[in-house]
Length: 83
Image (tube, one colour):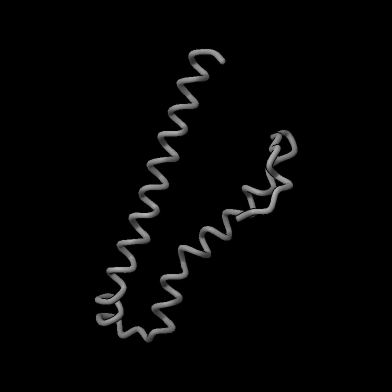
């Protein structure tokens, strides 16, 4: 691998790490903030659950484009089950 390619690889790893950390921080903050938000907006427990499930639905919907890349992109893990 060339030096330029190696630099791009580490830049992508760092960007993915930052995105992962931010997503998990959002998830933790939302679980703490849902209590005062529900009180101020008058949400029932069902509505609180729907708001908190937004992280699950975001994850589930992004599995579809990640699982089916364009034909010009090779993905050796495409046939493995998603987790």
